Length: 296
Image 1 (cartoon, rainbow, N blue to C red):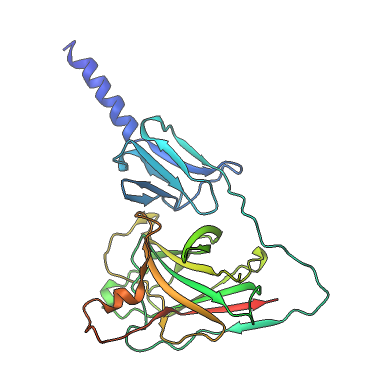
Image 2 (image 1 turned 90 degrees about the vertical axis):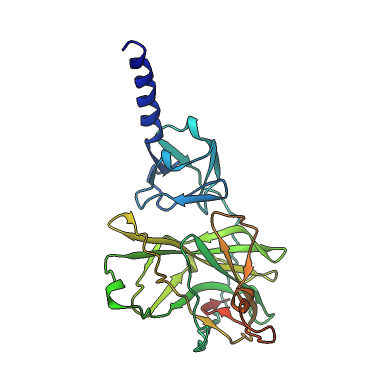
């Protein structure tokens, strides 16, 4: 019995440590940060809506904590206590020039979506990205609003759970070597109504982000499905942003997919994915269907 008790004590201590609930907070406001990415071994998960997670979910000696707009933190698992503090990352905003000249506003509307391959099934923990290379006509225009539309889901009625919330985030990145690099904007998580045709407008006019000559990436991340503050593991895809086969006279564009908890530099052309399993001579080109409201 004397030998068993110390072993039992050590076991209980280890269990308590591994099952410990950790919360990720803003270092200044001390407010919990929802849906922070916890990455390890080319895998990972998000914190809950309340910004917490259990340490026993991590099967690695080290893990990375990341949220766009904050400095990444790489931590040793055994050293983590009960709170992780993330520090805001200060990004250089575009220069704002005041002018008495009346602003010119342009609306680049959503295009018509084709009947075949007219939407993309966005999987949880993935991001659909589209590059925007502006023409001289709209170069240096400020982006005021970004509009994305979603297809209506037509699955059987028994799959429709009104309590399910599908959380998405919008991201904007600089472009380097034709890939997304530094983050320049990240929205708060927004719930997409997955069972009716939904249309979301992101108002970013206060951020003074311009259409740069060297381009910009717009990304839409699907965090996942949640119900009653818990992750909803039904595998049925219920978020489908619309695609278009129409080019745009105001900018050049290409659309890609990447997976949040894998190599962030690895992006896959959406057209390459569509072509898989199709005849080699079949040419299909699709882009993420977005609308822009811009001004100078």
